[in-house]
Length: 298
Image (cartoon, rainbow, N blue to C red; front, side, top):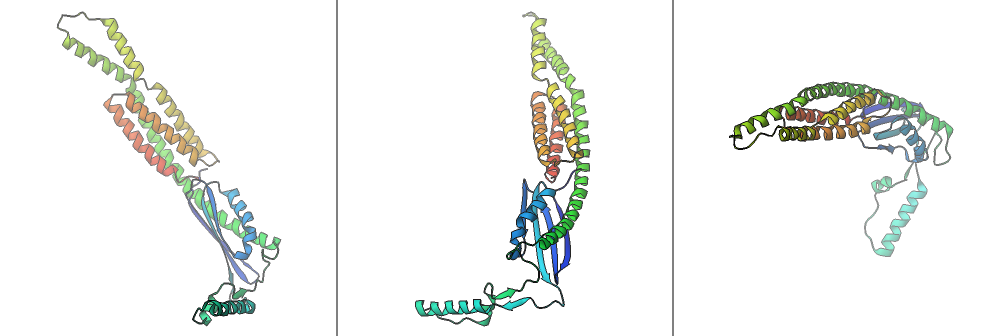
């Protein structure tokens, strides 16, 4: 199954008079990057949260936002830290006395200073001691959000895989067209060369059929695209297998697309044939569309 790198999931749990909300969203990224935003006193659980996310997601930037809000009707969980307020006031007085600073601290200034209003935690905190209860809470809420995220990524990945499969069908059609025209390249070159030599031959020089045949053989070897066509067809099959597989396919698909582009360029440069060149241009345009879509896959 193919997964997109774009998705969103959320959940919420009630615990200890608080609403704990979980929000997980992911976007394209070359690697797996997990960015966490959670209450400061729960930072001790960051490694656990990060490992849980990385166990489910192999590629993409994942933003995990965990908020904690006091539920309506619960007791006021904030208190004034008088000791800290006194420290701020003493520091301000020292600055005025020692350095001559002017001005007074207002009530708004005091209340806006870090730590003045303390949050009286009613549930265990990581700062005091890691709690199994909090760990279970975080794991449960995060798993619920990840399930919704993965469901969205799988649904969009299915659409992407279906689109890529249709484009691979188109590439195979173009490949079949080139395969059918390839034998005509040497035949047309031989006939054109024969006509030119016949037009130039005024009877003053002998016609050397052997040298003519050697020239045709050298041209046939130089413009042969059998190997490129074989490798291209093999790459089509590998792409389909990756889209149907269970492992992340984005990086491997990117590599295969580069290889298919290289083979297509080689075909276009080897064959001096208008119809084949046009088909290779169509193939390159289709490969570019595939590359853009594959960039969204995990």
